[in-house]
Length: 400
Image (cartoon, rainbow, N blue to C red):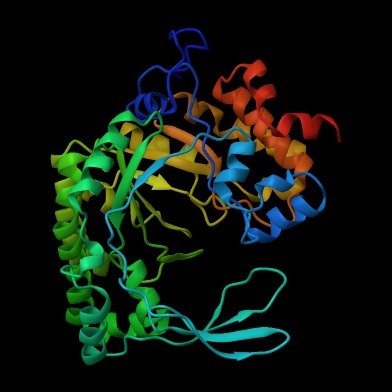
């Protein structure tokens, strides 16, 4: 096993978060391994706030508790995001159709009719109707929301100048968009209709995928030519606990050729750390993504069967990992947390693997257990104990 951690003081001054991220993702020696996380469920943040574990000043004037503020409280390094404006634009005003004591029924900014709980535990919304049903509705949706020529997408010259200055000067990793090539389409059609369309009208699905790639290729050059960018990240969420929602052959034949046009552009501009956020069991998709240059798996949920240790053995240095710490261990307490950290530590020490919870930290995780996780994880990553003690969470945890 190769341990790339050289220890604090090896580099004078210590590496910046940006330098550290880039070096670890290229299997180079570092002072310590990057300390990243993936946010928190709203219910968990509210519980911790109510229990007095989070400082009240973390709450914004609108009542929300932003993830980045909580992460900073735990000493988590942050990323700088450069938005390529690849989403649906412009969004419609939300239209509330019915409000009861328990539910809110509304049509969201892209025309999805949905019903959410009015309060309490966050759950997956109940979707009632989706805007894309067939070719006619796709063309209407495309023209309203996905027109590359929309003025809302264009960057002004002063915005590009500011982007260049900010991305050049940042001490945090700078990340831009990879885009979404089937996950968002699932959001627009609904899962059931997407599954049917993939069989009944695969050409239409591929047309939607191709348009997403065309949109990305029209938007990205302005960002890539002026920005100093380290990585690109996308979003898909197209897998269940048992595997992808569509046949891997469909991905290979209808989706990957269009994604590859975008990853090729990114790599032409020197961006060789590329991930897409996909939950569920992704083992059948990993080789397809690797083939087109999506080389980082995130957040790599362990419970469905994605084992980061086994994947590192299988793919070696061709595979990068962000995540891979089983969130279920946080519900089981300190002993389970330590066991999971020890399980993944050898793979982490080899490089190319930044460990963190394999999704947003879920509800009902005790503050003590999470603090213990941060404490032990940062020690494993090679952070000096004096630095870990300087993180804001430590004083509150020590007082428990």
